[in-house]
Image 1: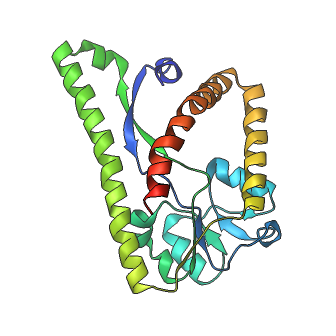
Image 2 (image 1 turned 90 degrees about the horizontal axis):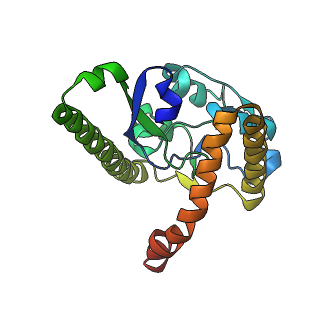
Image 3 (image 1 turned 90 degrees about the vertical axis):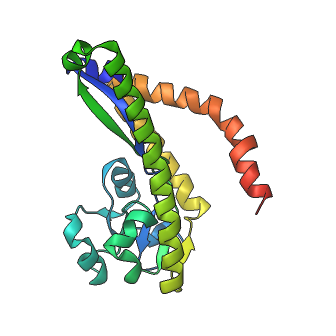
Length: 223
């Protein structure tokens, strides 16, 4: 992070994230790749680019117009965040299919600090800022996780027709393939991007085995 932002005279620190994001609200069930072709969906960023490659008609609509667009079927689906934030938007009132995530395991937010100003502070104040940012980052994740627990409980109770679905293996395989192609393409054009993604891929190889024998098996064996 510091390497990326230092040329701008900025220090960057993790500010917390909202955890795994859901795959979106859909008016109709998605069973095959063909069900996605021609489907109108609001989903921005990398995920939007990948969806476009498998035939989704991606559109970006202002947040204030999303509910009406989904209700009137101007769009067929949309991705927002998760229950804790989605419940305020009301999407659960007009779409019965809520798909699990595939694209954002933990969207991170960041604190930006003027590097010269930070370095001009005495060391004790620098430490106070760093500790405060770490505390805020941890609190944001915990708070958002709890909000989603409460929101999903309420959604299930008030709108029992909502069905939690996951994309089929066929769809996920195609999404992974297009994601990798997009990463490879950008890595070949941008050395810094290549360095960042390669670092993440190498770390994932280290951390995934531990995840599988800790969190994953704990949840699987205690269902």
